[in-house]
Length: 125
Image (cartoon, rainbow, N blue to C red; front, side, top):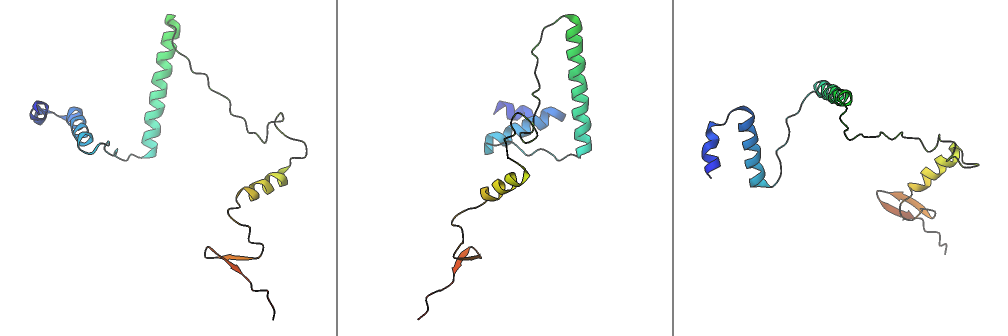
């Protein structure tokens, strides 16, 4: 309550932060972020990466040991020769993909139309 009384004097970032905090208290979720052009976001990320690299370089030169993150090299399982199976070709992958998309009963007795399996009447009298 006292904080809310003093909030009328807030300007800039403080005002925005107070408004977001108030919204979160009332609704239980955070406010939506304002949309931004992708090129601008890319520039901000590039600048942040450059800053982080510079700080890391300065720390390395000063002899300060910090945490390091090792980047894992991603491998494609179909192009990796150690994973490739004998007789497992592109056609086999295609067939496996096709079979994985089958849902429900296979319509061998009729056909699907509008989500309904239409079965032909074969009884002749």
